[in-house]
Each structure stands twice: as structure tokens, then as C-alpha cells.
Image (tube, rainbow, N blue to C red; front, side):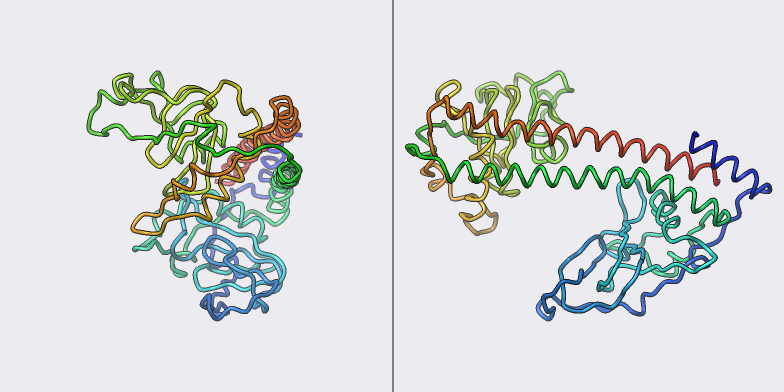
Length: 383
């Protein structure tokens, strides 16, 4: 049965005059008076989550709440790019500081899970005030909520929970496969029995650069050369095949592109991140590119040792006005260099994990789109 048709029929049968509205303050209780902030230095470590505006900040040895609650960001991180509020579904025993509103269900009024789905699509931009952004309790209570009878609420929750459970299961499997990949990578590294060479003897090292943003002749649409920043890694992961922004041949002139297969490391700003370039490209100045001096000299490098270098970079930072990696030490870093046949075997083994994780992430994206599609359709039926 089409979920939309099913809910539409229920609305027709149970709300022949249309779905009524109430304010959020009328359909749930807000327990903000029970919250209690504790500064980091005064927290005692334990097993109970300590929530802030947009996530778990710590784990402490005591709790305030025990049950099922909906947390809504109050100040700081309170609104997403789609203008919806920052929500957290919190269950069990936990502590909340004073940066998140605490909502609890009023029986026979509205299902808390239903309110979660309704608020996840609400535009709260009109009630966010000040700097840093804040949603005060009075404005939160005035949000208008479509309130169909409980059977309709329960059916909407059942349908949307089915999708969210699928997404959660995929997330769990991705995490499991990532842990297995990390474990396999470390085991391989520790079992290597081969010669070591300094990084600079195997790779050429070059810094990225940013063409002048004031010169329009340096920038173009997606027909130009790829120019990568940290935003590209956040969007596309560690294999970079296309960039958000592109540069012209004039911007490249005299610099030269980094060839395909180049590995780039963040050696300032977002230290501890890396990616491999799947096409000739350039990066901004926050990255250092390492380019193999011989073709096909180090196939296993990206799959394995790049992660070890990330860890090394985080442990060898020069502190100052702008933190950066110790580049002298970076150039001298010992790199294992097993025979090429062994590199191929390692790369093939680890690539099976990479392929599986990539497929799972693709599946997750499709399920997320499916969930958002039905959520919008179902909630629109209530309006």
C-alpha cells in the first residue's frame, strides 16, 4: 500500500473537517528547569551521556533524566541549513546542560516521536534571535503543530521509523566495516618486514596554492581544472574526482598540475586529513602534495600508510599564530617500502573493504532520500 494513500484515507475518515493545529507548548511538557550545566573541569567521568545543544559533549557519573525525551537546541547550534531546528532523540539515563530544551510527551495529546518528525521539517528561522543564535522557550512554545488523532500520528511514526531503522542499520554496518578495515590496516603495517626510506626520497613534495580570487580569469565553471579544498573531502570523501570550484589554464600556468594518484595532506588548518587525486588537479595552500617519483611505485600507500601519516602529523604540530605540521620531520618520516608485488596484494585486500564501504554509503544516501521524500509527502498531507 502506498503510505501516502493510506494516511490520506485515515485523514479523510478521522479528520473530515481537516487537521487541527495546536502550539508546541500545548502538546508537550518542557522540562528546562531540571537542566543543570556543569563546567568541564568539575565533571566526574562516568557512563552517562552529557548533552549540549547539538550532541553528546562528555560522559559523566550521574544523570538528571531517565526515559525518552526530545532535545531541541536552545543557543549556539540551533538551526540547520534547511532552517529546521537541531534535534536529538535522547533515551535512557543522561544529563543535559542549559543549551538544549528538554521536551517530554504529554499522554493523550501528541506522540513525542511524531513531534520529532514534525519539528524536523519546521522552519524556525523566524524565531531564532541574537548572536549567538538562540531559540528561547517562549518562542519555542509558539510553534504551530498539526495535530491529527493519535492513530494517524502513530501510523506516520511507524512508516517513518521503518526508513530511519534501515538507515541506522546501514550506519551500523558502515561503522563495523570501517573498524575491520582499520584493524586490518594496522595488522598489515605491524607485520611488514621490509626496508624503510625517508618520505622525501620516494615522493616529491609540493604545496598547494590559491589563485587570486579577484581575478576572474583564474576561475571558471566545471569545465576547468579541479581545485580542491577541505570542503571537497567533506563532500566527496578521500577519493577526489571532481571539485566544487575550478580554475583556468591561466591560473595553472607556471605551477603545474598535481598528477593523478597524488596524495594530499592537510599540513595546516584541518591537520590530520588526506585524500588521493583521481585526476590531474591542484589544491589550496592548506595541503601538501606528495607525488611518487616513479610510476606505480607505491600502490599500497593510499590504502594503508596515509592514515599513519595523518596520525604522525597530529602529533608533530608547530604551535603558533597558525598551527602547522613540522615539515622538516615530515620530509624525513620513515616509510616502509615492500616489493611491488606485496604492495599489490595489500592494496587488493584493503580495497575490498573500501568497495564495500563505498557501496554501503551509496545505499545509505538512497535510503536517506527515500525517507526525506516520504516524510515531506506525509507531513504535507496534514496541512
